[in-house]
Length: 479
Image (cartoon, rainbow, N blue to C red; front, side):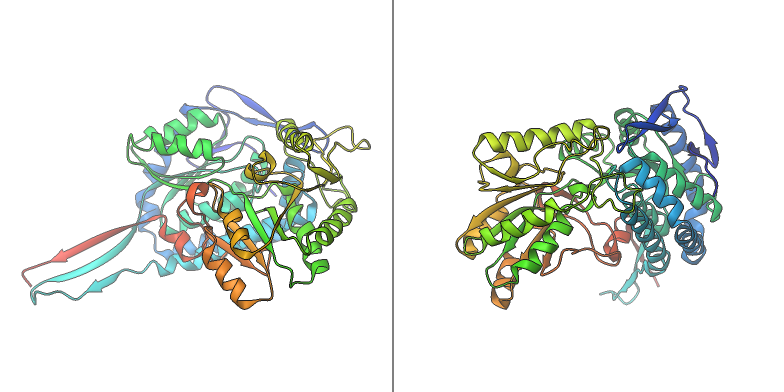
């Protein structure tokens, strides 16, 4: 496959205007994979200008024409899933099966929106006046800036890029500096699939200056951002300057309510698989395990045994089940949270340290904590790492209150065989996505997004397309 690991601006692969570069590091070895351009505001401005010039022609194309390019993109992504999956593993550290699988989901997103773009329906409104006709149109917003996080370098960009392009918007994508190679590989695929020059642009560089340019440039009508609450709030403040529309996916602190009527062995096995996927670096990762006191010790014993058996290592090694954290800063933060919990009397059942057999790379052992209390940092902060904390409850109302006591509201999980309890919990939890007896309450065809400080707007599904469309009323009189 083509390997232009550069910026893509107005159809041309380019270096940074300031000549800057960034060394992309393999978090499993701490070795540099390759250097990529690392620009700033000037590159972002050029990309927005190109996207603005390309917008009229791209918007005028029929959704069937745009859909054909997106469908071809999906086909190429599936054909090259092994290659792109390896790139994802090398720069993010996740096991290969997860890296390849992520590329396949990215293909699903392009395919879904290739079809969903054909359903950007308007409507006719019956008028009170016989001589008047009212029609509602749905039209693309314009240029969209997409800023994405490092934890899912194929999935995060694709769900926004595909939706915006399908709606008829043009895109300026800015992937994380820690994982730009996957995004660049997908950009190569988009070009090969027939994307017109300027309709899709990819920039790489300083996040603050590029974000400010997106906020200030009058042609950038919307920013889609995946990342921290802190940066999301800064974007909300800055958006007031030009009333730039925002979609924000800002993370979570997902509770897991486990009632005593379930098969604890099965739930514990699923908990380990879900919690330590991508080393816990997942916005919807189950974090606060709120377990009924009657089964808490049994559950803790089972997850401790399961976590202790997980094999850490380089994601390209077949036996590896858990990779490294993304960088030293993230590893040190997780390490500090666990150390703080230990000082507060939490029992570290397994893990809680860097593995001695892996001196290189940002590895941290899968960790289980027992006796976690709601006032502790390890309970109320988003860990974003391989730590499974266990808290207990006595009745369902208490569990729901414990779960809701957070500024986050992205995903929550409930495990019970009691239908009444399931309904009560799912309706009472203040989260955008609820998994009842399942660990994956998200899908390409379903809305993804949170309540409270977990963000604004929705990705995926029909709602994901709506985020990139404006509503226009055309009212004709004197007929």
